[in-house]
Amino acid sequence: MARPRSAGYDDQRDAILAHAAALFAQQGYTASSMNQVAAACGLSKAALYHYVRDKHALLALVAEGHVKRLEAVVQEVLARPQPAEARLRELILRFVAEYANAQNEHRVLTEDVKFLGDEERARVLAIERRVVDAFARTVAEVRPELQQAELHKPLTMLLFGMINWMFTWLKPAEVGSPRLTHEQMAPIVAELFFGGLQAVTTTAASRRRSDPPSVPVRAEPVEAPPTSPRRPRTKKETAL
Image (cartoon, rainbow, N blue to C red; front, side):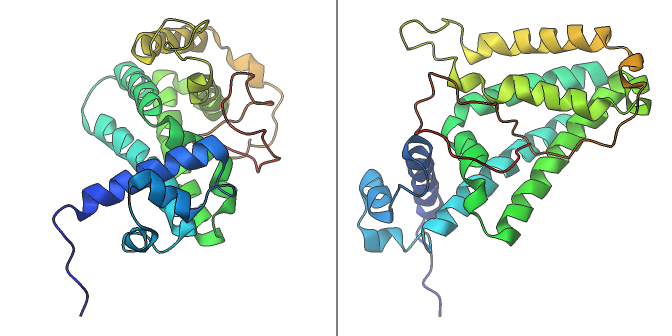
């Protein structure tokens, strides 16, 4: 008979995942140990294994939990009846806020998902694609002609490229960094995207090419930003 869970089980597990995400983001998944996770949580290693099977399970829970929260935001916004432009604007504002509050989890998603097993990685990528598709459909609703020109998804990926890595350079607490907060930057991102969206012409897609690969909610920069606190990046698989 399975041992019943304590009243605070879920809260403790969430705290473990947050500490694990912080460690993985700071020093990398492979360089982090279960001993370090246990120490960060103030638990013994034996107690830690009561909540998670192993380090691999920790990574899967962090990555999948993050994309599920993003999908929940999308579903919440889409459930409210509102014009397409207002819906897209709200999606942008909410995602900038989500990324600001989940910087460790997002870095783990972009850099360590390659360590997941095939089945786990497929689950994460499937959720990411659903999120991207929801954004792309909303872009197409704002400007239907972009879908006919097959530009709605590339423009969506440009949008994600703009917001995904904001946390690597927007650090108001650090000397020399912009003093703007994520909350202040979110409407700027929205205005910048909408201004550019209206300027796009369908002639840009007059020479047809094959569809771009569908990528998740992560768009990697060519190089790591110079201010990134993480270890030097290694070659990674294609991201969102």
